[in-house]
Length: 134
Length: 214
Image (cartoon, rainbow over all chains, first blue to last red; front, side, top):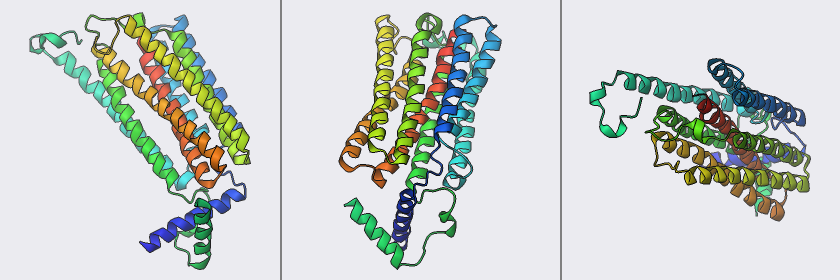
């Protein structure tokens, strides 16, 4: 117990010393924020423009919108959240990748299963209230 | 009180042998486990949103004879809200840069600007919700609308909590200045605020833009 406390206290003292010396490690620079903002603005404007003008086919628009959203999420992660291999000894990156995998499994898995459940359901098996589900 | 604790901590550090790993001394710049712990919370929050996105995705075409996204959504309004949240992200970034310079007034000013953008975002969202409900598109109307309101309102609730947190930090900064504890809290709030912007990318893409294409 006492050794754990010592570790924590030393960690804080270490942190304080670091900040007094003006170390800005891993908090991002003005440049990284401005680059992130510029990229995000473009990556937001393109999908909105494509959907609002409707000058491309729905298939092409949907694919582009999804790809640009993924790119923008990565831009935010790097430029604003400062996730990299150095921050917190790489643990934020590992947690981030792990979460990404679980998020994809949750969303894509749910859509996949429920789509097949709906298409394979016999019309007679459905109760009246939910029969509008395709 | 906290200053005294720090002084005590430094004295203890000088008196006792090294307990932590030597590799703590280079690289990441945070001795405190708070940052990583808060990051883990954010990741668990992302899983909560993943469940809500999955629910919405499954229910997104269950209109029950009610209105469809194309009839309901007002894209210019969504674009405005997206712009507001994106600008609030960079203003929070400026607050962090001011904090790094040790500029208390600058940090407070940019925090205040960020908070006002947050209020504007929630305001526009509440306007949109009241508009939908006035048209009869309530959460009870269809599975699609239940999923929509649950997902978007959960995000809006998070932004509201973020605004309250910003107000708390403004008071803390006024009372105690750029103390180490305050800096750590501002770093956590920074991650929280940027994380909400990332979630919003998912919302405007999968709910609004792809909804308009259906």
